[in-house]
Structure formats: C-alpha cells, structure tokens
Length: 164
Image (cartoon, rainbow, N blue to C red; front, side, top):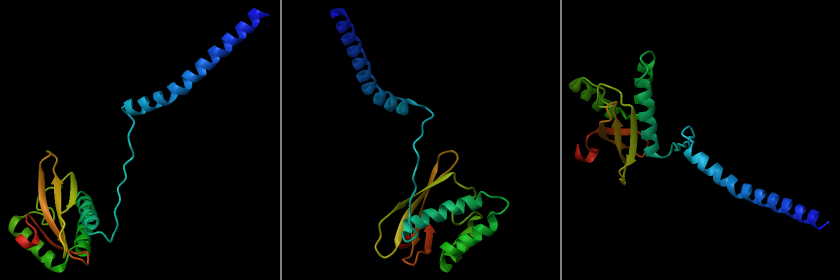
C-alpha cells in the first residue's frame, strides 16, 4: 500500500510539473514565434480628418499621384482634383510653371514619385507643409505647400508663400 501511494504521488507531481511548465512555456513560445516569424506583419493604421489641413494636403497628393499613375483615366481625375483642392490663383501659378518647365506643376517633375510624406511646418495664419516626394531611385524632392484656412492650396513651390 505504501508503494501505491508513493507511485500516485510521483504521477501527480510529474503531471503538476508538466502542467506548470506548459503554462509558463506557452506564452513565451507564442511571443517568440510572433516576433521571429518572417511572414508575420503588423497591421498599419492611417488616420486623418477633413478639417485638418495637413491631412487634406496628404490626401490630395495621394489621390493626385494615383490619378497621374493611371494612363487610361487619370487626366479627368487630375483636373478634378486640381479644381477641388487648389485655389484659382494657385492653378494659374501652376499652369505658368508648367508652360515654363514642361513638367507637372503639382509634382514639379515629369515623373510620378513612388511615395510621399507630408509634415506640418507650423504657421499661424495658414498651413505650410513640407511635402517630401520619394522617387524610384530613392532620391527625394521637397516642396512647400501652403493651404488657406478654407482648405484650398494657395501655393506650391520650393519655398513657402512668404519666400516666393
């Protein structure tokens, strides 16, 4: 009878030890496999709001570059985006720049970049943002885009509206 009790106690201890080891090891295994998995990706979140000028500038450049990249249907959308986001006086400036430089006046280039970043430059009476365009060869171009409080782009150039 004594050997049966000892055997049962040994089995219980082994089961308890195995269970405890599993409880400790499982979270560690899950964490390390999620970190080490080359196929595991984090989901990205992009947010903005139409009342925020920097968001609107980013939205404009994203949609504009998409439209410019569509050889079949981009032309009409490019014109519509310009009319919606850009003030009439700035549209005239863009057209003059395009005539002089034979390139797109919004991108100030002949090609379409592969990505963009918009950074607020912090002005009081209007929004000034730096738009960094990244090209296929990883070079970058920086434009300064000024937007009025009524959410219309009032200037695009290498310098802000104050320095033009």
